[in-house]
Length: 145
Image 1 (cartoon, rainbow, N blue to C red):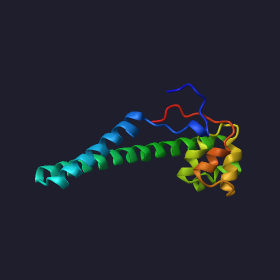
Image 2 (cartoon, rainbow, N blue to C red):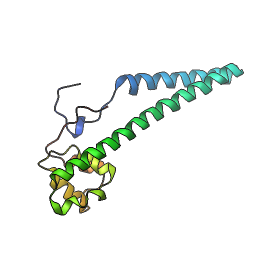
Image 3 (tube, rainbow, N blue to C red):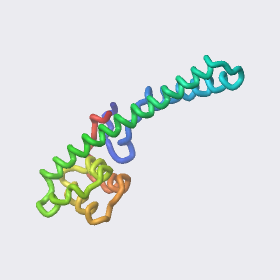
Image 4 (tube, rainbow, N blue to C red):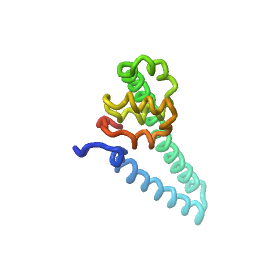
């Protein structure tokens, strides 16, 4: 992974083997098997099309399940962090934060997370993108999966 400081512009992680190579291979296999099944239909060719579709669904759900697990872990980490850093008037409102808001707040440094959390709870910031863009001191997440 690059040693470049992380910020809003470069925080998304793309894994070339998964996002590009596997996606292109699966799309090619889908096209090829669909063409084969359409031009010279047989149960074998139809079966191959079904297998390719099953692999595509498996790849999609593998990614979705991993992201869901990652989001739950981040939610827990951030709730614990906020419990430690927020003043008493905000601690009781941690449960009002959505998972998406907690995920975005993880990039805020300890010094600015209180102010950002207050702004989120007051309705000034609502979605992940605007919360991330409001972060001035980016707290890098170098252990992303």
